[in-house]
Image 1 (cartoon, rainbow, N blue to C red):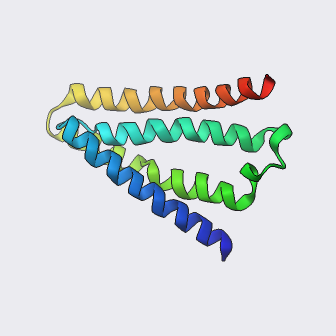
Image 2 (cartoon, rainbow, N blue to C red):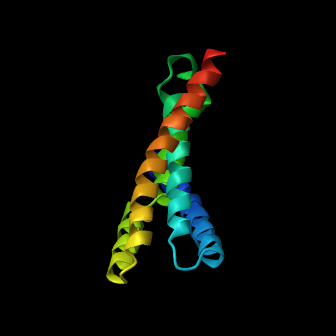
Length: 131
């Protein structure tokens, strides 16, 4: 039961963050799904950082890798912050509206920036740990 609570609470905060960021970005950049892009890129950076911390042996026994903390942050918070389904919906909407250029930027941006962000997050933790 406590594991479900950790995931649920993380999901609550992640969903609020996602909604807030998406609303802010949609006002700032109307016509392009910048909010989804930002939450996905941010989530990728954070999961790179968190998974590096969780998997590293030197800090394996710390509070940061406690099962409930991992469930709260990774499964709950990042799981509801990031969104593949909204990315898919927004990209198809751009294509249906004949906005091929924006659709291709959205696809390439989410994929390339997302993968780079995961790598960057992981790499930053590894550099920090090695010092």
